[in-house]
Length: 330
Image 1: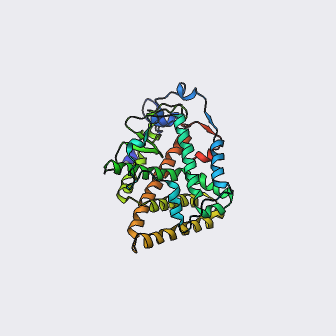
Image 2 (image 1 turned 45 degrees about the horizontal axis):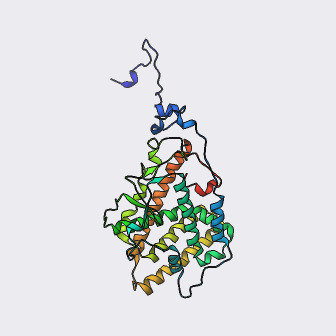
């Protein structure tokens, strides 16, 4: 029997060779949003306008003022950056978990406070990079714009890892994570309020929300717990991951400047290993640092892919005065 001899479309009723589209394809909406009717909550509320100007003004005052940081003779760049970070929760610190404020609700006011805190933390840290002061204002703010989110991602993961080590949790699967410098949330009990940035319910878009349906934030935890970096190493990691992201996003005219900054911190790290740690062969520690940073970069890339889907279907709807600043968040 040869299939070529079959004769199609000879039935008494009409048939079609076209495959019927799926419901999600027909409606132009992904499967996980079909339960929300466009005629209900997903189309009735107005988009919220969020003015970021006050935050930007404060950051520019930190980054662009003529005031210089103390010279601190004899200290390397990484040591100066470490002094600015004030990494309070570390293996050598007596700060207890009870000193942290537990956040029970994550809504608009909490999110805005965290956002402002993260921008200022990154700005103050960059201000301790002495060579950064001599760069143009356009470069400084563009650099902050490109790096503040991933800088805070790594810094937050490092603080959470330190908290988990404090609690003697060895598998990196704790439910409590550091949200900001002195705040912690319990993912089992925290209440997420999403009305300010979407017209969908939390259950309908949990796939896009970190800590609800998106657990990618936990991926680098075990690697950094195992590594347990010193504060100098952590500051090198923060600088390296920031410069890597800036190199990919900023114009080619800035590439030489970024390459020079990378060389300076690499020289400082080499000096730290040789003179302070007495560690002439340190390739294994470099590999562990890069493993953590690459995992964080991969998480951020996956996050960007999710955000591109969210934008395609207008899932997140706040209007920001400076959208480029939050392009990796909404």
